[in-house]
Each structure stands twice: as C-alpha cells, then as structure tokens.
Length: 85
Image (cartoon, rainbow, N blue to C red):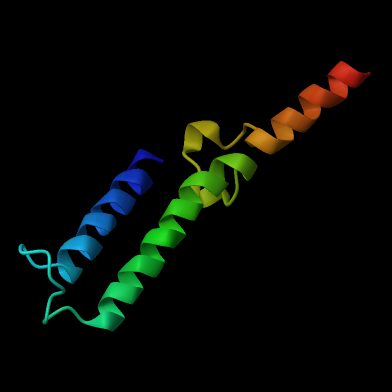
C-alpha cells in the first residue's frame, strides 16, 4: 500500500511540474492530454489507496499476509453484530 501512496505522490509532482514553469506560468510544452491522463491516473490511485483496505479486494492488490483478513467494513459489521447480540 505504501507503494501506491508513493506513486500517487510522484504523479502529483509530475502533474504540477509539467503544468507550471519555474516562474509559475503555464508551460508551453505541456500537453493538455498528458496532464489530464496523469491527473486521472493520480485520482484512480488515490481512490485505490483508500478503497482496497475497506473491502480487502481485489485480492491480487492486497499484500499476501493480509489476504486472509477481512476488510475494514466487514470487520466493523461483525464487531457491531457481536455487540448487539
């Protein structure tokens, strides 16, 4: 999961540096399509970073040592069910 966070942060830096010049003006060489693709990919990685632990799915993205565990939502529901009887 740390790798997804690092990749997302790296893409955020790439988007900002490709859009702005050192003077803070918009870059003339930045392709709007490339910036849009990087932004969409960064958003997808951020969502994956937060959604995967909630459901512990898809299994191929969950680290092997955590695949047998429940996601956060399932664990919370089971805990509430045992508390309520």
